[in-house]
Length: 113
Image (cartoon, rainbow, N blue to C red; front, side):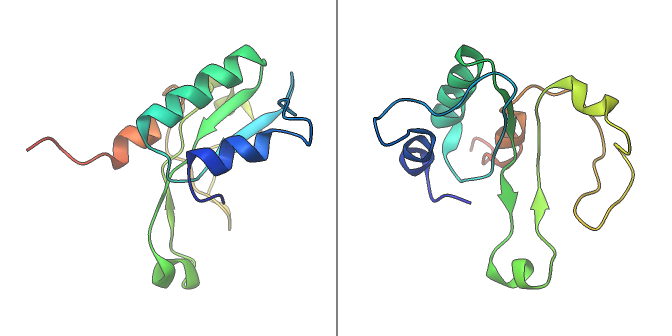
């Protein structure tokens, strides 16, 4: 997991500064980057024909050590067609499919005051 938007974007670039991503790649974005960076990544994924999943993590060091992090994932609707989708596993227990990438980030946004 990367620290922020700039670190994530840097990781996508190769030594020559060009994006090292392309069609068929599945990109799971779990860093804390905010909505502006998430939209930027959605646009980049679309441009390079990459399947993008926004998957912010809720939890801190204690829950991580206890294996109790919550991942609020959103992405392409084809995820629901994968064998085993919706069945609990040691790694994940998805609840529904369909929200576009970025909706997971909205679930973590503070409510307006």
